[in-house]
Length: 298
Image (cartoon, rainbow, N blue to C red; front, top):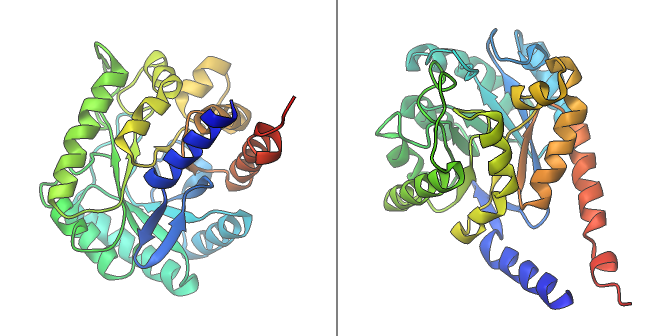
């Protein structure tokens, strides 16, 4: 048992190591939390919607104090049924909030959730630390080229279709293998665009049924062989609510339970609405897996 644990730790060291976020190195040997701020009026969780600068400053400050390493901002809702926002409208919204966020919290690692290369170009040139693309660079053919010009990570997420239609009839012969094949193709494309740091997101809730989502969670460690860190975004999503028969406001406990499952299967970044609870979840998981426990002799 000791030998297996030591080998796993060695693999993690040579696989995940650090992320270069515009010159700031982030060590992923310890999982990190990414807090979510939405600059729109239709994201599925109303409490995450930011309608004014003051609201954003308060929410970002709270997340940072509670332990968020990244703040992920987005102007477009990607809830099932939503339509793609035009790049000009998205950039108009992003500019206002991003500039204020960056000036108020100059050391904050700001990730921008966008599938438009024009938006990515502007935020990266103004100090964004990461691009999080729900299409994995598939929607905008210039996205990978733009990101490749900057020393930042790129999040490759899997999604079947687009938000407007993705939940109409999700179907896979084997969802785990389908996502694996998608990752291998997108990784190759990203490398050709000179993107060094990649993060893989299986896209739980994006064109997936409840069975698909739990299958991806159950076999999440199958993606370890790809040698890039895994990001999981499950916070308060409908598959949790449907299993527990609760509304979005009541889904925090279920979210924490799923976060623990994801950590046990190797997730390195948790994208969340509730930072404090996610940080506490990681602390419990790390204590459970501490050297004092796993190296105990009998």
